[in-house]
Image 1 (cartoon, rainbow, N blue to C red):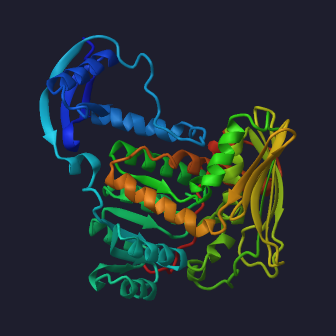
Image 2: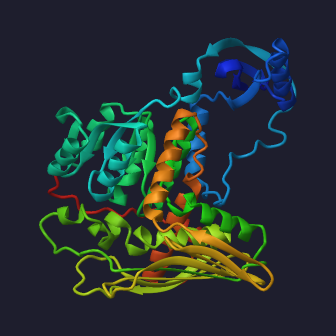
Length: 483
């Protein structure tokens, strides 16, 4: 059978932001660039004509299904402090060119996803403390319109609806409220529920054509992480934005400090220490249903709903540790216990974990979530000639034998980071930026936190490779809950 030359769809940007879309059968990158030069030659007086915005293969359904399977079985990629779109393989294209049959002019709004400065309609899934707090910023920010609200608890949905002037017919409650919200067809959804539900809600939202903004951790088990990974990759293929809200990743001091680390200011990093201390959250008494665990971050006390404290909370420090290491751990070993007074649910609250990397770097993480008035979150890395300290809502700085970087701090990082992330989300939607750089680092940080939880529960060495093969799903008991 003769080999078919791959079909590609190409989008060029011309004067005034006009998009020129056409199909192309092509197998050589040089030929594609020659096409760009041809279009430039059509209007030499215009410096804006013509730039290549994107080119991508036109795949048939079996190929898409094959890609989806590969996405699920392949390990996530290593996080980067400066994420970028993946480069095309050098020999991605090889010989013949044949211009295809379609050619069209695309309006700027279609190119960029929405008109400049237009409002993005939002469906809020989870309207409790953090959900309503973010919604308040959305309402004040001006670039969003809250179109629909879903929350398990009807009074919560109604209260938020009143607060943000959402019509009663677009307020939904119960476990399946998210389905009714998606039927309203908002441009984007904000996910602020217990993490167990994130993979379910995110996958449904992407399938419905929505942009997704979600909290961390992205899931409570390996299958959930892989489902988020595939949902995010599907969003990228469909030109949808998929963003995970890590505040430190949006902080200028962390970004600058970590760049200096990766540029070699510390020398080879031998030891990383990360830590997370807080007073934990109320551990409610057992009742006929798990409703008491569905609000107020009480789900941190439950492995299946919240992933456990080390996953739901410590992930902030663990994410920075992974960012510094710039590689995935080979293995972890650790110990943990429940040290809070009168524990009810199964999450441990006190942890000591050691990660080891192929490079030889050793990473020690410890965390405790017990009401003892200790509060601190951060990460320290020790190199051959200097060390860096990174504190959440505190100072980020580097001290060395010869070099010093004074750095700085963002005292209100929790709020400032969220606001920067929301602004990035809005800009990405309006400007048609669908690279989704927060996806892989967020999945990796969740997996590393889950690795820590499982290594501590087993009290044995657990490798990353073996852990990724864990197909067990954590399922909370939803019996008796309102559907």
